[in-house]
Length: 350
Image (cartoon, rainbow, N blue to C red; front, side, top):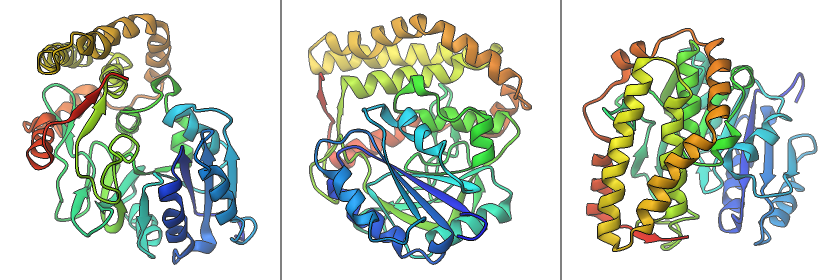
């Protein structure tokens, strides 16, 4: 690789045997493969996908890949931070294993990111089994602080948040910001990172020139194979998503962050009560809302330390973010559209 790779692709795997072969094959055919470093990190999979990944990578040129056994199920955040600490590329590209890339995806992605002067970015995401548009990042956030406006922008544009399934970021910036917050475990981690990118003076971009295909919710909504055919969630997922969205604002200072935190709390209470009535079990509210508030209190020292640490890096105000990224379209509007298409979600207690 000469002086080193231009981009380090980091794939976190946990029981992804169904997806790894196509994902890795699409990386092997990249037009800039000789400048790509691929790191597959495994969170102690039980389905043999760790062995499969090593076998597939062993056929690649030496020095172009690394397999890392994390040694435990550390979730998305620590699971990605561990391989990122070993990466050598100028860019880090966090890629879900339920994806596959066009042969020129990485070449176009890096070229466009350099052209735009991006700090972080996402390619245009299409459905796994077709060229149907899926996402191009969250354009902004709604009145409750949830990311919104996932639409097919007509050209490359700044966005609040690149997609977590295909998150590109400068390695130097990722390291300076402290990487993913490992207390998050999983969900809303890319939102937290994107807020820190913007408030520290960086930019996030949706780059239309590069495309990839993504299944989405492969672990939670496994039915349907390559195509999502239902909505499915769990108390575990809702707990982490709800808690981590609140943590984004508890890690920031000032009046506006507290206001968004309180507005979001009100929304979550109403949503949790409605969900309990629909499911006919109060444990849904207890597990996904009450437990969230308890954990916010339990982790207040971590949140305080993060708030103090980030304040030293902050260059923009939250009011600046409100002026540039507040959107009237509610986040839940997109969820209602999915419900109309796929039906009401199935919710498990585990």
